[in-house]
Length: 263
Image (cartoon, rainbow, N blue to C red; front, side, top):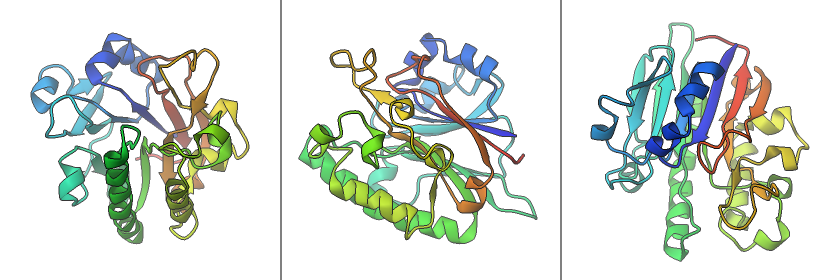
């Protein structure tokens, strides 16, 4: 069984002060895809190259204390790709791909941090540019290899993916064009939302992010923003899913899915 976790850290230094390494030692995933590491290479050196026996590979943002992605793995990758070829968004450290290729297969694990548009119209337009750039990249990958994308997608796809869907229809993360992009990726694009493959109908149980405002976490007023998106052959191997809501390393919960394959 291949145990794959995804977590938006909201800062790797902050998350580790809240017990992330101890949890990883107990939880023992094969890989953990992390987003929003909020650090530079100099911050990782001597401290975060490895955690709980997992070796880290990172894509850092040029801007200090911003964005950034990574994958910690128990297995040595055959290749590591940083960025997906977008000048604008590669500067923000949003894409890390680890390849585990053999003569019999081509397989990748991706950690991706989609932009948020919640800070204003300018960032929402950037989010739309990202979606437009990223869709053909994923289709090109899918034409040549199997892969699982883990990440903070910053989109709640359906009404059941957030608590207050009626009042959020004009808010970033649940806008019609964002949701339509997800629908296109899953339908015409042929990708699979693995959590929904395993749990098609959950509502309150599916949330992975809660606002720090009010009593959102205490009242479970959440959103499902963190996904495993897989090619159909890999999605068909998904056997179990867990969202660790009580683990408060950041404002996101870790999500783990077990797949019936080994690297």
